[in-house]
Amino acid sequence: MLLIPCPWCGSRDEAEFHYGGQAHVPYPEDPASLDDTQWARYLFFRANPKGPLAERWCHTDGCRRWFNAVRNTATHDILAVYKPGEPRPVIA
Amino acid sequence: MSPRTPGADLPEHPDFLWRTPEPKRSYDVVIVGGGGHGLATAHYLAKNHGITNVAVLEKGWLAGGNMARNTTIIRSNYLWDESSGLYEHALKLWEGLEDDLGYPILFSQRGVLNLAHSLQDVRDSVRRVEANRLNGVDAEWLDPQQVKDVCPIVNVSQDVRYPVMGATYQPRAGIAKHDYVAWGLARSADAAGIDLIQNCEVTGIDVQGGRVVGVQTSRGRIAAGKVALCAAGHSSVLAGMAGFELPIQSHPLQALVSELLEPVHPTVVMSNAVHVYVSQAHKGELVMGAGIDSYNAYTQRGAFHIIERQMAAALELFPMFARAHVLRTWGGVVDVSPDASPVIGLTPVDGLYVNCGWGTGGFKATPGAGWVYAHTIAHDEPHPLNAPFSLDRFTTGALVDEHGAAAVAH
Image (tube, rainbow over all chains, first blue to last red; front, side, top):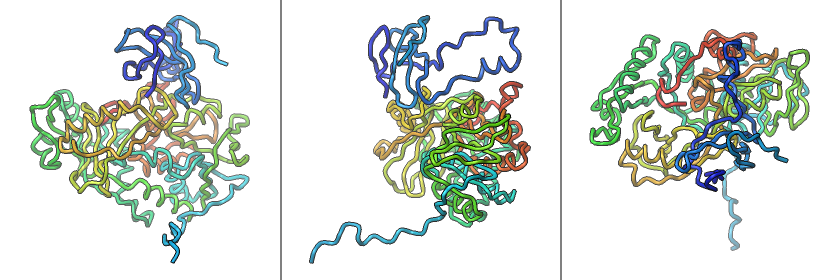
């Protein structure tokens, strides 16, 4: 069970949150110009590191706001949380 | 008289079923991952193709990953032609596997019920029954009373939140003893001269001029003519070593068992809507599982609220389990693909093959996956049964979408 620090509400139980997958995946600026390979990458390929992953969470049962977290997928350590629109923090 | 040393009266350790060889400097084929699929691939490389200069590299102990952590359900009642071809081929191999291996695997064809709880469930299920029959897969649609006849302990009362409105039934489905399957496959591969090398973690994949030439391991470099990835939840990590990416997300999948109980549950019951699957092991434990934890992780553990949810589902379907106790829960790392179908085939690197993306459903395919993967490796092209499951289907758009259509969502 994760204890997730919502940037607005503070630490809450994982059961209050909804997972949103990899963060910082923008919709293509000019979708019509993409070829099949580029579309496939946008639709189906997401980072899957064994280690830090920048990802989206929504505090569904709390403030109902989205935010980003950097979490280590090998240890469950949450290394940073930050608000939408902010850049991914550099973690030493 | 002085007391006996604890353990002094234990029997001798039985003979090992396979050797513990030192890795050679090079092999024709290196299989990365000594789980069920890796061992089955080794078995069929030797049996079907006469290829025995093979090493299976396992970073832990043989069959200690998902092969030791699954709920042992075997069935082939998938919706699409491509899937039923692959899974039905596997089921036919299961039916002869004990004789093939000369080793008991406790394969028990006790049938599987996939329950329907809504009108949409009913429509989808009836459609799947008809599709299965057209593909030569045994399938029946049962009404609630017939469900009760097959499995008397299922609650078919209409006075519950999600009443059972019927079920698909595949009588040839069942369970097998997962450890015995792995041991039988390992014993067979070893007897053919294949080296099973445990505690040997692959740390790098050597590629020269677009062709694989070997692997770096925790026990030194091993040259290889061909390398076959077979590492389930860690497939993305290995692909990264070879410089390409897979459309795979790794998630924890949990399961649990009760304490040993008298035989009460004669079949396998799965419910997609209430979301739990339950069978009873030969030894007597109720074996249960459900869906993945939502987030990506490589930790082989998940959160307890997932367990609580599937227990609630189990009690809805089987009120008599209310007094049973959870004895043990655990997790594995499963490799989830975008269309809930596996990826078995060639990669952008010559001589490097991939078998992954089985998500929550890889055990049932063990012999079938090994069969077609061995063919792919031996001929450097897919077997007709796994050709639809290529990596490039995500670019062409020819997906094999089995989300929910085949019972429990992957």
